[in-house]
Length: 258
Image 1 (cartoon, helix red, strand yellow):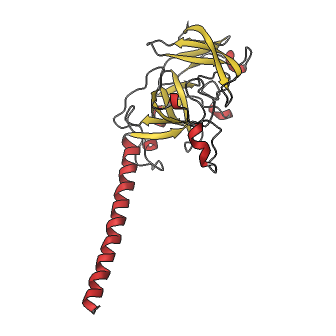
Image 2 (cartoon, helix red, strand yellow):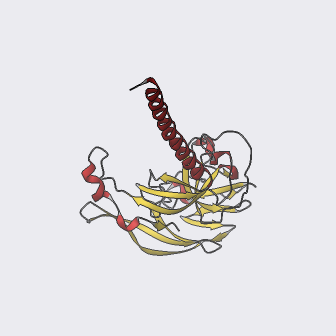
Image 3 (tube, one colour):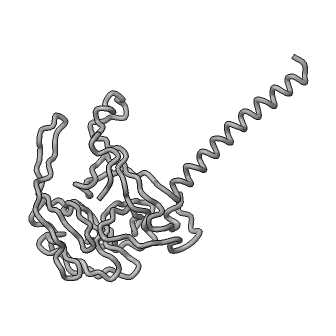
């Protein structure tokens, strides 16, 4: 091989490497763009939103539902304040937001109170602006073991908020600190969040100063949870690939979130 052929081959190899690198850069930029302006996936790590969301659910969150803040962007750069192209969430929306005490941490709860609303829980029943929220007792929520046997039954209620949003909540205990509260008046530009698992949710009933969620500023909203795209129970092990398929909860995959 003469010198000219060697140089040409080296240039071709270098061009191939640059083409591959450029394709990778474009793919990363596209993924970041979709994550920033369209949809972002989130994993459910706790039971605070049972029965709506289970541990091991993976959800897609609409980033454009409420517009954009600095928290919509990866690493949350302080390039602007407030929200751009913003719109307000509705009562009953299931929302991912940044914890006001530490904005590096994501939470997912349901919007219960809008700015100016008065929220209270009395004997386990929710009141909005002094009016009890319509609710009715429905069949118990059941936990099952890997063989399908019922291991626990939990009291379950169907609630309908002003505006029509309807969903189920759980009552684990008849006497709990969060079952009787004072009246919370939601400040302007903030929202009141609660988990559907009412006795197992650290939410706006607990002030942020003592580790709760408190009132959530509008610019901390990330987006609205719209669909479960996959759901995996806790029998799966990362180091045991043969457990992955059997751990899939097929009936929960690609289902909407109410």
